[in-house]
Image (tube, rainbow, N blue to C red; front, side, top):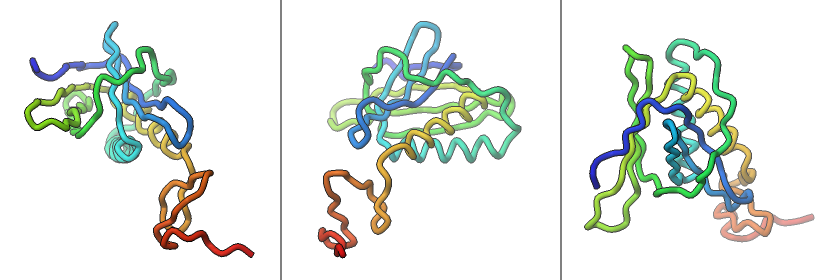
Amino acid sequence: MTGPLDMDPVDRITVGTIGPVGKRTFLLQARQGGRVFTVKMEKAQVAALAEYLGKLVSQGARPGHLPEELDLEDPQEPEWAVGTVGISYDEATDRFLLVIEEAIMEEDREGASARIGTSREQVAALAIRGTSLVEAGRPPCPLCGFPLDPNGHACPKTNGHRPPTT
């Protein structure tokens, strides 16, 4: 590896999904000039990222006009899967920096990483979109909180048994 991909600042950053509900793949995508960078994230990672970014943005000045074009661009094929995400904020420039690292399964290989610099407005839009994508999925089970599956749900709170029917 030659070092992290440096996309600071980006022209655009978004999250999106491909696939049907229940089998969706969550993607984080950034564009700088003609370079589109796409990585795979877990739903829980998107939820945590959106929540944390929302808190960070709410602690500072109110964002200006938020980007509206947040659909995924081509290519939508992820370059790698995200393992960790670090976030920092530069007060002097009012910019956020996301440092993402690849989830690696092989001990003898160094993972890829990327630095993504964004504006307050981009981060606010990313937080809102991430939250809405996560909430648009399958509803949670009222007993265990895991997503309900239309084909049946083995709820750990009921020891795998369905609730009694009347």
